[in-house]
Image 1: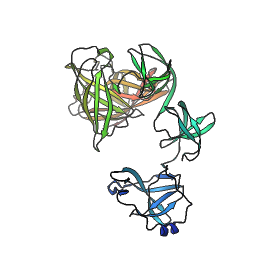
Image 2: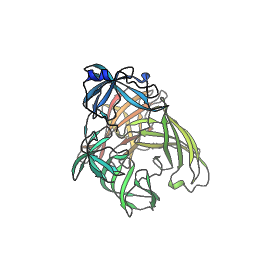
Image 3: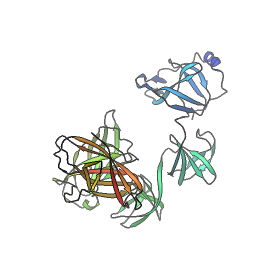
Image 4: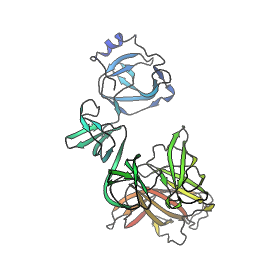
Length: 438
């Protein structure tokens, strides 16, 4: 962080003394088109320069909380430089711009979760990271508060703040077992390859994060997941890697890799597979779906395919693959003989059935089918509640079910998928509530 030398002077003195200081166009360029109204607050942890509309420094403001009137961005540095945010605030001198080096938006928020640290971190006594109090090594720590990407953690020596460049936030400690059915890669932390693998076996799991599991091994604590790439379909016919992605302002463009799942990796023939990818956030809410694509797969080989999503899904937490065609055959999960027994008494024309639940890390993936007596276009919002033996809800999943204009009614079945960020595999019963129908 850049330190400010000297003491704070009055705004009036600074305005006169610094009147001749200006930023050159190569050092600070405006992006007026990115201007936006704001109602947020910003906490400044260090003395911060004030600038007028011509980017002349007109004063310095002491560390404090300020109200942001507008936000924009500027380009700092020579040549192309790099973009940083700027904020218009109100001072006793009037409105002024700031480009703070050490500030956080919003406020400290309580949290109750765990963080897996992949590297040694400096521990600070304050969220401004101005007073270091020691180091903390690679381990799992309990987070009791968060502020942007800084976290207050509990340690044997007391509370402190960390600001990891990358950390696994939201780890849940568990005691469970997971059966591996294929050779599985091991990682020191998620995405950091340990250079080892294990054969099919029963693994005792001590923590989960997204679709990752942690277990103890001869290497110490290691992480693994049930698929090599980022997403797989329910029957694990194929896996899709989603690492190369960017948002162009209208669409997320993904250069994906695709390969067979374990049971098909010895296949010598080339098989066409039609699929799409569904994206979810950490709450299990669906945030987008990719365009449909067809890829030709062969055992032991990976193929590249371009996908697009009409939303920004760069920061997705979980994804699933929906296979619609495999080896020129349409894939359907519909079970026409399954009783459609789940309904909301207030909306009896909609019925659900064939519900199955599988677990993938912290998430439970719920699949099933639905149908309506009414024909025509309709959009239904609903909620599934998973109940324990005492009738208490252990988790809820939002559902959005659509019928297009060609839907014939009479209970014709269509598939659905929902994701719950909890383990509901041992539910006793399910309740359906329709919340909106258009």
